[in-house]
Length: 84
Image (cartoon, rainbow, N blue to C red; front, side, top):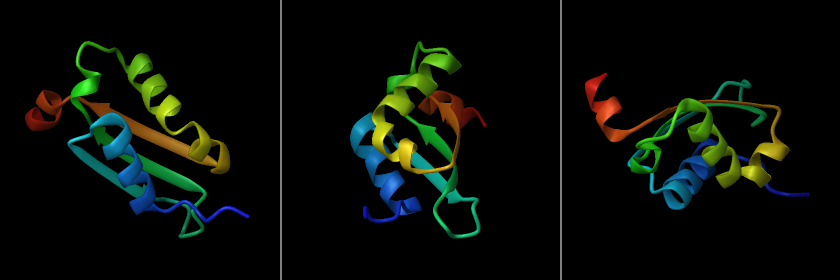
């Protein structure tokens, strides 16, 4: 059986695969590693609408997302994050 997916694993994967400058991942499943909420900041999102950003993340985490129950994300460019 594969290792459980953790917040830190997802954070590292997103930084590596999307050149994310900031990633916040929260396990919202009560600790069982089956539901996650993420805020992802990456320059790769510049010029992309929300749907295209989500598709980019889903493609980057295809194998991981297939193993968890729920995945919610907010995708921002560095400029959008700084303006928050």
